[in-house]
Length: 180
Image 1: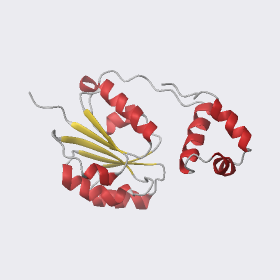
Image 2 (image 1 turned 180 degrees about the vertical axis):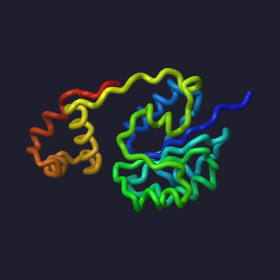
Image 3 (image 1 turned 45 degrees about the vertical axis):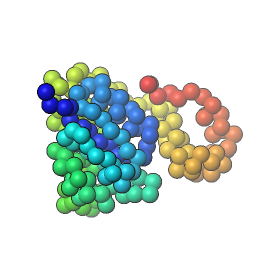
């Protein structure tokens, strides 16, 4: 029996990687390894073949594009997909020239990721239908991202969001509208 293939997720958004990891583990037979930095992923020694790599383009202090060639050389994945919220034609061309097999703009649905990875329904299981995010969910995600960008500083986050600090604190005290 061959060991299950690995999928490496390299993204500094811990919530996003946790959700992706859980979904892939529920719906596929892939083993999932998550890394917050591409340089960290390069130190990993894989005991199974690496089927694919999902690589964020913009991490806190690293650019995924700078690591495409090294990750491809280290793991020889069938798929190396750049994921970004900052899509442009120039970075798409650069990513493909360096060895990426695909380039996707965030947000991307789990079903679309399965399709990009060419995972078939028989080994991917049933994928729950996805519904669009509500306005409250989008606002919550945006607030969390800006808060992370400001290292948890409420005053700087409120200023960046153009709202009063107390309004932001009230919003943060509410429970997340995201479905777990």
